[in-house]
Amino acid sequence: MGKAHRMALAAICLFLALSSAAASDDAWGEFLPTGEYYTLLGPNDQVLLETGRRIYLEDQYLTADNRLYEVVEVDDEAQIARAKLVAEIELKLTPWQELRRELGLTVIEAADPDTTRGTIALYHTHNAESYVPTDGTDSIYGKGGIHQVGAAFAEALRDRGVTVLYSEQLHLPHDRGAYRRSRETVVELMSKEPDAIFDVHRDAAPQSAYAIQLEDQWMTSIQFVVGRQNQNLGVNRKYAESLKKLADDMYPGLVKGIYYGRGNYNQDLSPLSLLLEVGAHTNSRPAAEKGATLFAEVVDHYFYGPTAEAARGSRGRAASRSIVGLIVFVSAGAAAFYVVNAGGFSAALERLKSSLRLRPRR
Image (cartoon, rainbow, N blue to C red; front, side):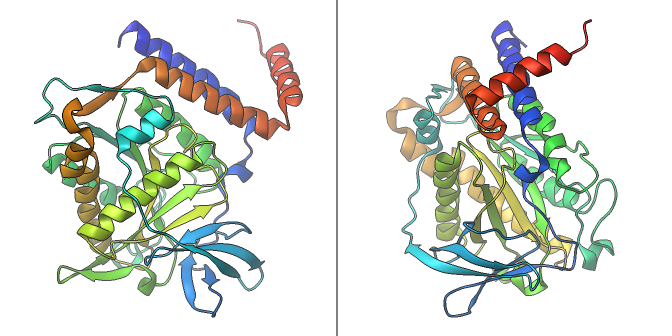
């Protein structure tokens, strides 16, 4: 690792410590005991979503047919939420290079634009998640069934020539604190400069919520989750919508929707970061593996296939980033996150001073 890369990693780790110290577990959302789930209803009482994550006011959901709803009422006792229709969205496919430039991050041409593919990173915040029909239980303390789904996703990407950084680091137990613990994994993966990072999960919902038949095969659909408490929300939204649009064109129904929920999900650390719900605990693991394998084709197509080639034009394939831009991006984002959670700039400054005074001398 060169000096510039070591400096970048040091900067990331520094601001990671600041943001982690400021963030409480409330920043990661809340999950129900397995077997319980919230139902999101539309204006005519139609079921829009069934999910094992808690639903909060102002959360939004983009359905399979690209209707955007916003939560206006939540009955926590009945575990029912209601939403109003905000808009019918016409999805646009924004090239990932443009999303990076939008944040002031540059992309550099690779030596061989015709053959070079980049790097995708995968990890699991909730390692224990499993699939009852196949694994016999919804949770295995350690590497649950979700790891085999992640392995299938990774293998499908490698089969297409993509370099995969697949971390199976454990972040147990399965609770809201797991996202705090997985931040270190995200930082480690970021130091290797992947083009995108995916946190692979499974939901908790009835089997019918995710079961889908594509290409004469039963598999699970995939749901994207984007954190609303995140300074990258604008870019994350465009990114998620771009992947959904491409998936809709390639495999209609594979992506069942995009949930914009309360939480952060460590997406403040990277502009091209996404949480995937690959089926639910009631689906079989092989069905989830099939869904992940098809989605790998969508990811490859978006980053390195014809879509990427058209976006690249005469510039050549983009494969790596400006390290200076990375430092500025992470530093600014994490600092803003720290200030917001501390209650303002003055409070953040006092908290930082206090932390430095209490730090033991070496």
